[in-house]
Image 1 (cartoon, rainbow, N blue to C red):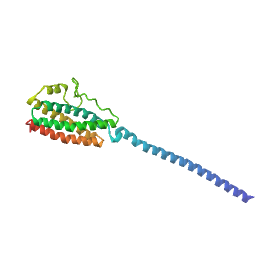
Image 2 (cartoon, rainbow, N blue to C red):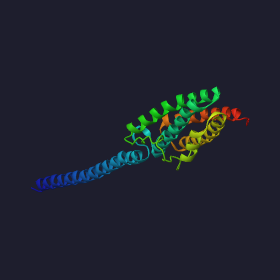
Image 3 (cartoon, rainbow, N blue to C red):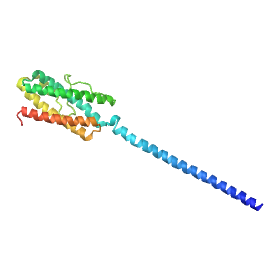
Image 4 (tube, rainbow, N blue to C red):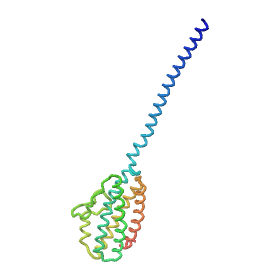
Length: 215
């Protein structure tokens, strides 16, 4: 009888210990599992939240949106100036330069408009040709409506000189905007376009300064 009691007691103790071990394991498992799940959730969600805020769809950010939105309007004015030169310039060299500027910037307008559309952003309305609408606010190198009126009324050699002087200033503003994009932008194609703008328009500034007799 004593041996039987000892056996029962040992069996009960073993069972109790087993239950305790299972409870501890369950608690530990829940703690580990919960901790792991929470950590996993945190690690999964933490990177995506900043990514969606700073580098939105296709890795673009706010600086890229600003660059595309503003450069579209900047380019549109340059194209308007080039169109005026095609009609009013007396120098074939000025006419050829104007054709070159329009040929480069028209496709870039289309490219940047495509980016904005793909990002779910609004493409700015084309108001460059509207009388009395001043596009110069906030963008470096933009001509005022008064500047554009003055250019439109000029002709011959006076037009050529005014066009070149204005376009140099316009290009300098575009380069400034492009440098900001290169510094702050996140979207590879946009920073590449900014680099192209800097290269092309720096060369055109040098050409125009030579045509003005400044270098």
